[in-house]
Amino acid sequence: MSSPFGDGGHDWFIKCYPNGVPGGAGNHMSLFLMHDSHAKAGDATAAYKMSILDKALKPSCTKFEHERHFRGDGWGWTEFMGLQDLDRDKYLVEDCLSILCDVITADGLRAAAEQPPPPPPFDLRGLQLVEAIWNRETADVTIHLGDGETIAAHRWVLKARSPVLKADLALASNNATADHLRLLVNDMDADVYKSLLRFIYTDSQPPELETASPKNVERPLYAADRFQLEKLKLLCVEGLCKKIDASSVAAALALAEWHGCPTLREACWQFLVKNTPTHEQPISTNVF
Image 1 (cartoon, rainbow, N blue to C red):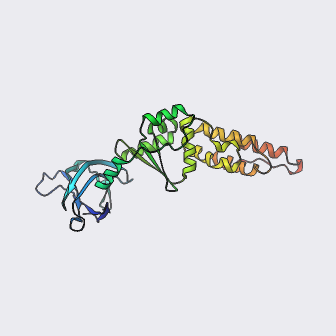
Image 2: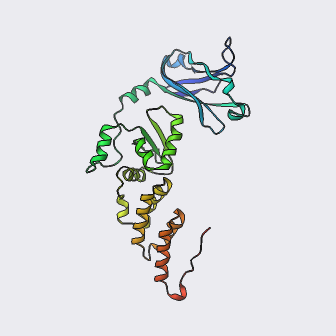
């Protein structure tokens, strides 16, 4: 039996029978979601999903129910997972099994059903092809960002444009329903990610690169490097190379070293050599 947890004003706990329910065949593990607050909160209607986690906390065996009505009792599966599939070396840590349970109560189900389609993350004016995508297809990915904001997108677009996002989506699909995915991006705020999505959808230069100062380019370059968007990275580098001067060369060189941009690094060194007296010229060294 798990510790109790709350959702939607109701208390729940998981009841596990490692060798199956009493009187059963004894060749399957049984799992049940139990309603633990009927006396104080009344009946509850909820959808729920349970997953067995391996030692890497990756869901392995997952089952879900779309909607059940609870009256202080429980619902679940008498044959959740065959004991022959429950590999001790794969799943048990100090003889303990990790189970992930997601519960959505009726209020959450109604809110999800009534929620309007999410808005595009950037202005669609003048972008006819992108506008057609948003008008014809419902976004099926929600990105949760480090500043608390959420942004909607289409998984097929993200997968086609970034190998990193493709891998992230594949991982997220192991722990989500088939029709909608959730991505967590803690190291990026909404402004940067919206600019990133605009590039992903339009393949056009982000507005921040028009001035191409190291301060303006730092975050787009980080995003390009983080998600392996080579064209965006090239646009950032080209913009910086055109704007190198005495006030920006040090910052530009730091970005080149940090993000592995040999073209930008060479441009910075050429500027330093050209604009430094001969007896003060720097000596280029490899950074390890």
